[in-house]
Structure formats: C-alpha cells, structure tokens
Image (cartoon, rainbow, N blue to C red; front, top):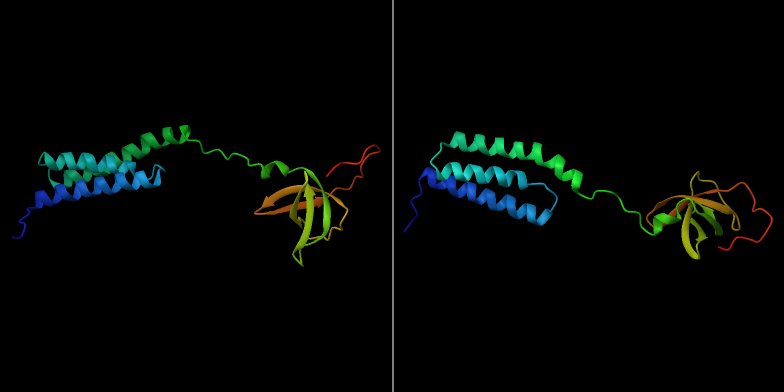
Amino acid sequence: MPFNLDAESIQKIVWLALLLLFAVSEAVTVGLTSIWFAAGALVALIAALLGGPLWIQITLFLAVSLLCLAAVRPLAKRHLNDRVEPTNADRVIGEEAQVTEDIDNIHGKGAVIIRGMTWSARSENDSIIAAGARVRVLRIEGVKVFVEPIAASVAAGEPKSW
C-alpha cells in the first residue's frame, strides 16, 4: 500500500529533515556552523504546519537563518575561547641553546640542547653553525627549532648550564 503524500506533507517532512540534519551537524562539529540554519528550518517548519505557502516558508527560512547568523555569531565569537595557548615547547622560543651537532640545512642535520633536552635544529638563514656554538631559538616548526648564532660570548663568570 503506497503512501499518498500531498505537497504540504512533503514540505513538512523536508523541513523536519533539514532541522534534524542541521541540528545533528551542529552537535557533531560544535563550531557554530549550522545552528543558524536549524533555527531557520524550525521557523519554516512551523510555517508549514500552520499552512503557509512554500514561498513564505523559504523566505522565513532564509530570513531567520541570516538574522541569527548576523546577530548571534559576533556575540558567540566574542565569548568563545579562540586564543592560542602556548605549549611547553613554545617556551623555548627566545632561549639560548648549545649546538651539539653541526647545523647544516642542506644535509638536513643539526641538534641543540635546550634546558637539558636535545632538539633537531636548522639554521634560520641557511648558514652552517658549528657544534659548540651558542644560538638563540627563533621559532619551532614541528619537532625542529630554527636558530641563529649569538655573536656575543658569555661574560666572565660561571659557564651557562645547558
């Protein structure tokens, strides 16, 4: 026995399906990506349940979705934590290090010791830096630190512990 659905019933089913799709999509992504469209689909579904014509349903869907997007997203973005929190590795940026293996970008080798830990190292300006040299960490890419030589020598006194 086939279902005989009229256009109004199909519209209600489509709006309900879209509402569920957008709501589940938002729940999965948690990034304020589709909640606006879920609100628009809900209003369009209500219009369909009240017998509104299709053009009213579509207009309400678009208007409510865009209004929610324009009104709520800036407020939500302000209150979301989108700041980058530094990791422990980021703390070595700006630190001085001791080169333990010649740094040679062309041959892809080099190592430094920073705070007692050995890091793969590359020269920032592609120059070769000899083992034993002192360098400053400029940035980190993956597991490698990029360094530049420090020109000044250690002042008199106790040597720096690496």
